[in-house]
Image (cartoon, rainbow, N blue to C red; front, top):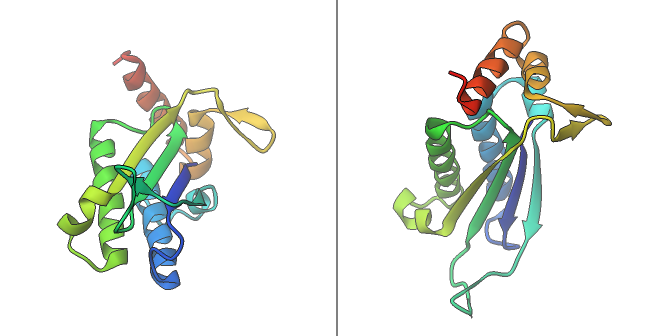
Length: 157
């Protein structure tokens, strides 16, 4: 389902905190997308790619870790409320990973949300559409939920 690109400096966090951060971010994305972070099918389809980067702010080496998460999902998955939840949830996960107050880390976390146009998402050697994805993950009712989300997105409702 989601493809998450996490950009983080090497050694920004201890290994166990980093592993927990990536799990927390994945759980947040799955929960917001389909309502159940424990959905085994959705977890198996959620990939997080780690990119290591040296970061400069204003042309100078950053003095504290910065985090960028790019969350790509099929079209229809985000509405304004889900976007707000995504930013808040991912930022809170970073605060937990650093064991610091939210206000101490919020200015160092960027969350970019991308919706891939329906029909432009491919997996298993074929194009997959949101109705197929949600039907596979949610079972009965998944197809109808996807069609509802796409209709709202297109302004049909």
